[in-house]
Amino acid sequence: MSGRVLCISTIPFRFHSISKLPSYPSSNSRLWFCGNQNVIRMEEQGFLQASEAVVADTDLLKKKLEAMRLSGPQKLQVIADFDATLTRYWIDGRRGQSSHGLLKQGNPDYDDKREELYKYYHPLEYSPTISIEEKTKLMEEWWGKSHSLLIEGGLTFDAIKQSVADATIAFREGVVELFELLEERDVPVLIFSAGLADIIEEVLRQKLHRSFKNIRIVSNRMVFDDNGCLVSFKGKTIHSLNKNEHALDMAAPLHDQLGDVNGATSDSASVRKRTNVLLLGDHIGDLGMSDGLNYDTRISVGFLNDNIENSLDSYRNAFDIVYLNDASMLGVVKLVHQLFPVGGI
Image (tube, rainbow, N blue to C red; front, side):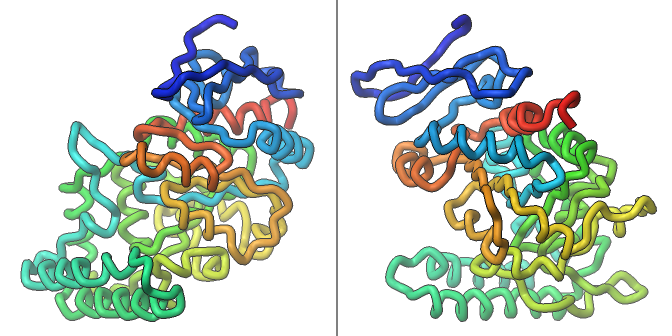
């Protein structure tokens, strides 16, 4: 094996190798794992290329990869969180903004009121002493109050566009390549967010400058009047604890908002028939995004962006693959390439 392998474990370890994954002609490398942490750095071909990655159960991952490869792209759907998953966690040494946190109403009093709600409810969201039932009620309460403030404060679509233009937010390297690759293979991408669909769409519009017919946003959607003022929200509220495929019927194709007339790749019914899932998230709770879907095989990819020392064990036990230190999306691009090489479709 050529190239370098760097283990970041601080305890003595031994190297172990596994044979290169079967039936992937684009892969010329073997995977090497080290110590109890299974942390590797690859600089060869493969979906762990040039990234620090953690794989807790290599045998299970190989079985999942083979099952997905045999089923083909027509059985695959991708479910992705937005903030700190598709977008970068750090930007020029600063913490990147979330799609919800970047919003400025143009009315400082109402921005302050929403910040006060955040300071009150956010600790409750992660409290270990509050039951999930009670947390769900609290989240519904928080989202409802926040949405009311946006309406009461006179939010406009122009304010959304300006907020995105002024924001510190950017996509991970490789996201565009991933979207293009999945579009070529007619694989639907569902972007799940407890934030605001209109803001996510504006971020995609301003940062990518194009649309993808296979992308759908599963998030809270605003209704504006003829003057561009927010008047209401569509459907049921999607918050941090119900962000899953039960909310799929609320999704709308991104191309509808961006003027793409080619039509959506998949409707809700056909998406649900795709029983293999590639799930991308940055929190363990994001694994719940596939709740409500009767999938056959799911490969979960976690991005552990910060606080690695304290969170690594829980992430590697929860996700099939974990990328560390605000990694690029290029590893996932390689994974899809290896699952469905151009000549194999």
